[in-house]
Length: 475
Image (cartoon, rainbow, N blue to C red):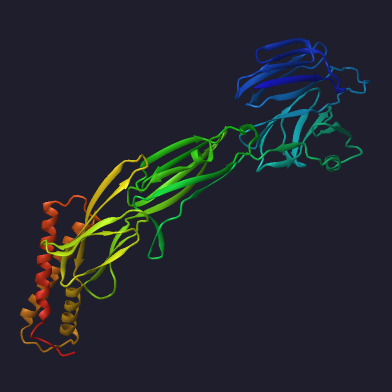
């Protein structure tokens, strides 16, 4: 960055002096400029025979700054009008990446104390300070400089607001009157936070009043942004990061904000069922600003009962673009629905005539964003057990509708009930083991088939109790 120092005297006139600015030195000059490394401290020293010396370390950022330093004559003659009189002056250096403003005393004159007012509120009692403003806008900074004599009497009280010095004598005017003399703002803080938002393509599935994106569908992110920080105009990057439900990073894409609108967009494919987290970041020369949103992907092949009754199921293809080949068979291989093509957005009914487990075979192909065709084969299962569920419920109601049924063989009845409970537990344990981690099977192993077959055998045994018992309370 470029730092320029100008020198004036107590009468605001340019003054020749010796200036040391970083590694640069100016002899008998009134101004000096030096290139200073960004985001570093540098020293400003001004000296002249017969004058007070100014020596201060300041922190610079990236933007060029010009400051004015005042050095005053050393006056020992008490008859001099400027004897023991302060001449306030300050300068500010704004952080381009925040609302922090460093305030430095710029006066090498006689004084006893220095304080600063932010919008007429006493905020700092020190030669230098750093103030964090809450937001962009117009503000006023005033410097109050006093000299106190050996009897602790304030002889001078000057208010300086950045361009005009108001000399005030406390014998005739209060501090409040002096502050209220000038309420014009003298520092402007620019807005540094950009405007940034994203739009994503709408979901294509509505399931149980919730919206989802279908598996293998594509999501396009379109950004809208405006960089407002004057220090960062024309500099920026947009970055997208896509995470799965386990917070594992799936995709990353970065592009300059100067790119064409089509290049600013990003499209990715939903290849897994579940939630995706989208983190879109606008990175300017100062900070990164994030927008986070989520999308949920669901299998577009859904199998579900069509009513509260038994044996009636439907398979639907919720994809907007993919056709699916479908066939249905029993666990033993009996063909229920021969192979047929299910077009996008279409459904077919699956009429089942008996309790048991049924295989739904599906096959389709999709194309990746890199134009690669990928074939997919999956087997879904329908466990149709609602018939036995209903008949066993009826059986239990008949047994327990009265406290004293009057049945003669309670031992046999209790044994039957225990058998039913054991079979039910075993059956649903089988289903839980099969479905805990799978909605569908990409590869169907022999052990998977055996578990489904065993579950079918248990279901058959359970259905044998649907014939009831000789002990009927007659509810």
